[in-house]
Length: 82
Length: 287
Ligand code: SF4
Ligand code: SF4
Ligand code: SF4
Image (cartoon, rainbow over all chains, first blue to last red; front, side, top):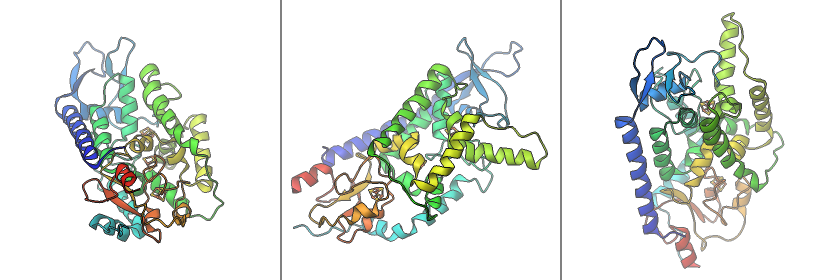
């Protein structure tokens, strides 16, 4: 059972953790994504917000080698998992 | 015997209880993208499919699963759920989430309702661990148990409108998988006979928020001195919870219906208020 003060400390620790994760993800975190046209072009670094947008249309995939590839851009395809 | 402490927060909550459906409706203006902003670089803290033609934000559960399939840690989605969870707990479910609201609306239809055994609430954690974390990470998004492939919100909010659009546009209709259609059918039947079946048995987002119920800044406060053991709150709670025994039960969606109990032993509390019944430990001390 938690006392009031412990609850407040726990609350602030969680808020701090949430804020740190959001800030890190929004400002610093990026991932290298290979372009859609596999013409030997190098991977481009995508920020986490950009990757959220791509993931929300199922536009990025991880291949067997572990590389992240852009599969398409724009609206989600009609045969989307959702 | 301590008198009822009516704090500003509990007074405000009592005023709003009768307006809960209107609050839920007002939040639809946030989630259903009336301005066509389509801000899918940002996750929302509610269960609303990002493949829905009317969705302002990205679904946090879909993003956690998709990132899991990519083997990337979803810092933003996880941080958001921690921050929102520790502030509100399942108050989000009772007042803000559109998929919970949809089930609340159907619950207005006067059909017989069946109760659920208590243990079914734990299935949500199984869904969270299996379909959102383990399957995406180990098998990728193509696996049939990947959350979006079995999610009724995705079927109802995305697949159905897409199919209607295809039919209207004279295009070939692309049907979802048989499994997804079955889940959608079962969901549509269940919501007429069980109060909020998805939220109570399967929702992985509700499972995450429920983990915060015991430590969240806003919580359901019980004053044992005010309780007359009339058990009115048992009848008021449609989720089979006995709020005077476990006011911050993980199955509670914080609809706050029980706050209207005659003796006023249950109120919405905040960890920042000075109250004799602010935490479970304080209640023990009073006893
Ligand atoms: S299918 Fe379900 S889990 Fe996936 S993005 Fe849509 S609402 Fe979220
Ligand atoms: S349990 Fe899930 S679907 Fe239900 S209200 Fe909460 S977040 Fe929304
Ligand atoms: S315990 Fe109270 S707040 Fe929680 S679900 Fe039941 S009636 Fe709603």
